[in-house]
Image (cartoon, rainbow, N blue to C red; front, top):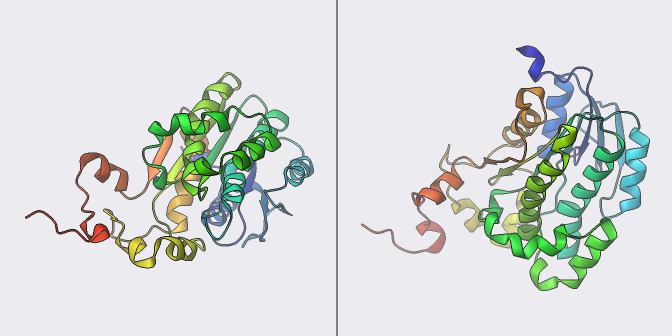
Length: 278
């Protein structure tokens, strides 16, 4: 059984694999599992990898050059890069979180993946209720190419807002559609939806939403934020052969938040300041 978990002989790209977040934790896992890892990021990875390229995901040309530089066959793509919202513009958040991930996937699947491969992208438990957002993201999903998607974002500032929520909802909608598009080539496409995670982005969330608010978000499992490693492991699993019959899935890695919301068993009184019914 060890073979289905192994990445020996596999070449992978991790977008957002530098620094100290979920992507960086995934890189550590992948190196340990024997993968040939190529990282695209503005920050260098924390461990030795086969290749690192400094890439600004707001520049489609830089993304295309990076894919060409990696060359050869790519077995798995990890879209782990992201912006938290403010202080970044809504358009920049949309570009990094969703548009670049889609563009990179199209390039890798189209040029570097043979008729078998896997893609996993990081969404968010904050996109809960994404199923009802189909109309909001339909126009964006219908765009072709990076620049057309950028133009859509610039033309729809009200829908885009701070960018984070819509980008994460778009990721899930795109994932389920891309899974169907790429299934004939045996390329699997999945995503995860983490809850609050202790990454370098957390201070930005706390500054925008308020630290008190973030502290009081219900955390059913363990009563704490997750670690980057606790999010990296599911991502690495989904792109491994162990998940070979899984595609089109949005895996909630939120410590039970979504389950609690669906069942009505979460207590939001601390967040709202309302008294809990006796």
